[in-house]
Image (cartoon, rainbow, N blue to C red; front, side, top):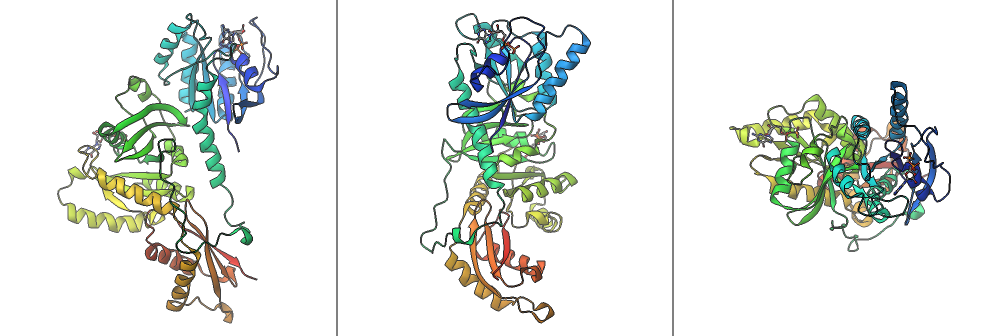
Length: 464
Ligand code: GDP
Ligand code: GDP
């Protein structure tokens, strides 16, 4: 799976010229004359070693009347809907025009994942326009010259993380149960593969999710305020999300926020304006999800939706209860929260819960530790020999039922995947094994192999 990039922007900024350069053929019509109406066109783009689909939304003459403006808007909206990422072109020579603002608005309303580029930036004539482009509030513009092929390296570097995220997602979306038994790794104790540690180039990706006012922005600002900010804020690395790269307790992390982040960088106020309706999508790109609850109103409907999403997406999860500074009866509150957590968020069973105050920074060290632990567990592989020893014990302690006199025999077990951990048990009559027995095994795995903070998937396969 690759991604789809739409080139959008007002007429004459150079969309088709760029499209041609990326596709490498004269597929799109380039015309100096206004008035040539074209529709969306698609091509296979290459940029370095990247391959993706590109959509050219060029085509409409400068909108002078309402109907044209409407058409231009609809065409752009369609392109945005079809795309994973939008490359928003402005003309560095002309500077920012009211028409550019219209396009920026469309992109904002559609919550598009935007990369901003100032085209025609070759030479000095484009310098002013590049600076003006900051005023759009869409992050740092890439200086581009589609005609002269300049700035493509920067575009390439901007697209790399996006491409990686899509590749990673594609890998994670692979069906789990169709694993050929011949392909299983039966590695033994002592040679568990190491957990991939986050690096500067591949930081740990976390997303802070939660209902509005839970304190997400305060939390992220506190973290990056106290730590070294490596890059960012960057708009639109993922659709609907803004991310920053920072180092938190020595761990390189990319933090996705689903709402405006206020920050020290120059472009802060502008980024804040990026409104986000369905920021939950950021969760898809994260490795660890921090589900932030407000201690005053925990476990709302919205929190349940987030819990469902986290489980479905198979993310490592840490629950953080924020605004802990407001609590007087901490011991009692904690007991109450744990009880409610078990009862109301069964989907997140096994996720660690930590209390924090984003405002004062108290508890952030514990949060970091819980994130690292969840990440480690999410990546962990348990050796086949340990699993099978464990399985024997579990079967002895609580044998599977014998529905209609048929003894269920479980013979062999192995871990087939990580991120999140997935196990396969070879059994007779897999269809007869009750859900409760499945849960017994999953809960046992979690407890005996110490696996908090990750969904565990267990599949039964007929051993014939
Ligand atoms: P579109 O309407 O946005 O698709 O724009 P076109 O690709 O048709 O380009 C409009 C005009 O701008 C054409 O005359 C192009 O040759 C010119 N143009 C495109 N890219 C550049 C560039 O990087 N520098 C300069 N100076 N002109 C460019
Ligand atoms: P977001 O919508 O989730 O990003 O929430 P914000 O970060 O904007 O915070 C919402 C409100 O809660 C703001 O008034 C914050 O000052 C306040 N807030 C956030 N964290 C804490 C905290 O730890 N303690 C207290 N007392 N207030 C907090």
